[in-house]
Length: 159
Image (spheres, one colour):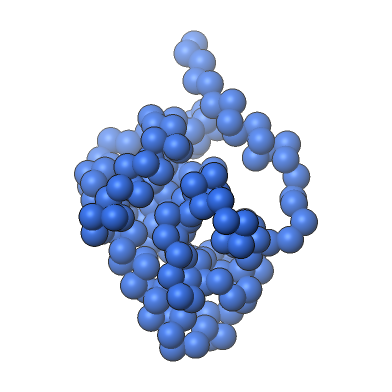
């Protein structure tokens, strides 16, 4: 039997729910690199998922704390979609074969954070290891988050 170690996951498993909203709080902290915030726009921002489904898992998030898409004003909708598109463009540096893009609305819809809507942009590769959670309750992450942050941050500057 092989053992895959992912000790960074224990923080997620045992951390419990924090006070406040990470999507409201993190952009205000002024420590974008530590918080994995790649880009701040006027109404929305791009942040890396600290507990990703695969390397490069990004989220496009409005600053405004809302959970209903119909509450987005025109400016927010436009920037949110533009940032989702920007995520796809910068993730191309990782040579994915495809993407999963989606929004989970409500806990029944699978939202881990159900009171602040956000898009997930997840790069996928042919033959990737995402079968592991199905058969072994394990995720395989081939790159450290900080290294992915550096790659995508540099790509964003050039895009």
